[in-house]
Image (cartoon, rainbow, N blue to C red):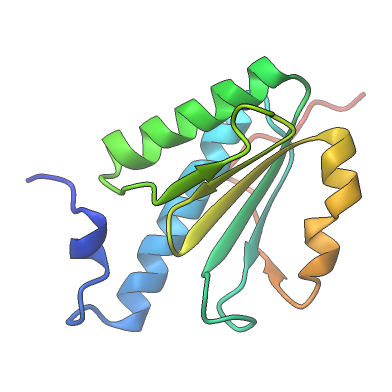
Length: 143
């Protein structure tokens, strides 16, 4: 059986619960992929009760342009090739200080440390619930 595409996953006959489950699946896959590519400070925000525009934000930091590119490319591969979703847009790839991947209901924000601190996405969306990532991503080693 082929993976569904965006139009199949958000068809009118799908229930809101099915759409939310699909959005959560994509967000967790993006978080896991960021972690597997050495992303740091990974957060998934549940925006469903805050805005009708998005379901989830995934926020992660990287240490270099190369790492941010690798994370964004691997997330694209995971969500598009493995899960059958389609990216609607990408911003910031060439500058590589803040790469935004737009999958419609899920938006992934990949930052360098300075830019993440400056824009402070998590505090802009403080009313959003944080998804517990225990068991989804590995905890960073204790220092």
